[in-house]
Amino acid sequence: MSARRHPALSATDPELASFVAAEEVLQAQTLRLIPSENYVSAAVLEASGTVLQNKYSEGYPGRRYYEGQQNIDRVEALAIERAKGLFGVDHANVQPYSGSPANLAVYLAFAKPGDTVMGMALPMGGHLTHGWGVSATGSWFRGVQYGVSAETGLIDYDAVRELALAERPKLIFCGGTALPRTIDFAAFAEIAREAGSILVADVAHIAGLIAGGAHPSPAGHVDVISTTTHKTLRGPRGAMLMCREEHAKAIDKAVFPGLQGGPHNQTTAGIAVALHEAAQPSFVTYAHAVVANAKALAAALLERGFDLVSGGTDNHLILMDLTGKDVPGKVAAKALDRAGIVVNYNTVPFDPRKPFDPSGVRIGTPSLTSRGLSAEHMPVVADWISRSVDAAAKGDEPALAVVRAEVADLMAAFPAPGLPLS
Ligand code: DSN
Image (tube, rainbow, N blue to C red; front, top):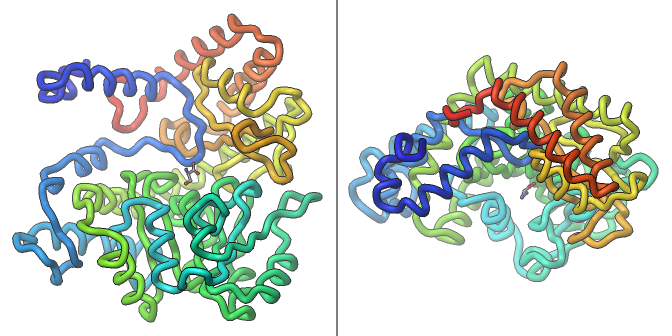
């Protein structure tokens, strides 16, 4: 199969080709529930593997430091126009290599080392680059962190305001990696205005939902929108920064020459294709189906006695708190993996356990929705999760093998985009 799909690679480097082929089989046969992952289309895969790879293009369209940019300029300009149109913003920079460099560029654009910055604490659902201690952003800057309410699991906007007014941070980040609920960008904007802060919405997780109208947009509320392109947006691994015209120069200068060298043109092409796909009516259907599936899965898990942080979900993501199940998150995640269900273990807010061995499991529906599973399948998915967690508690490996076979059986009926061997 690999030789047919990747003939040159198989001939040149059969060992590496065999790893790729094995990954294709794994992605086809398993139920992928990591909420930050997805399946890109065959068109995005093709665009990401083109001869655009061969070109250096420091600078921006029409202003490069290398010649021969006739086609590259058109690719990047197209990606920029599509990003602006899809997200309703004045300016887009499509060059950041990924989410962390994109966020670092925002610091470079607006803050100086030692400045106070504010974001959601990582164990509460934030991101490393929102000023968390072990990240450069938390050691080069003075990070102050907000969280969620212990009672509700929801962001307490009064507490955020109090912290912002006490600290007057240069930057405030909203958004994160384990937030199952709608982000109130208008409320954050009001707080940032009062505190005199630049507001950054890191919408990496929900960019596809925003593009498809299944989550409110931060456009018009925030100074900068930062996003990766490979999660719900279903593009290649990359990132974008979008902003009002007044910040365009600062953002562009921070990305290049401030932080990066030549853009990855093959990725820019893949982003352009993904943005085109995300502008189609079918993507609106997809984004709403992601949320409908997550809500159905959350309801089915609650019925089966699972505790969910904040009691459910408004978006693509569910954070399961396994404290009551007596199975730590890591043990459950590894058992689920053996059952063909790919998740990640995750801290839950106020987690009594350590980040490398926490109490939670984070799941989401972007990938299974890309394969065409719908709300009617979610009770089955919840059953598999429940049986696998029970099996983990009992050390029942045969039960995990049974689930794995059932998963592969269902997945075979739902071919994944970009994976014809499904
Ligand atoms: N690693 C991403 C995630 O899984 O959410 C965030 O950077």
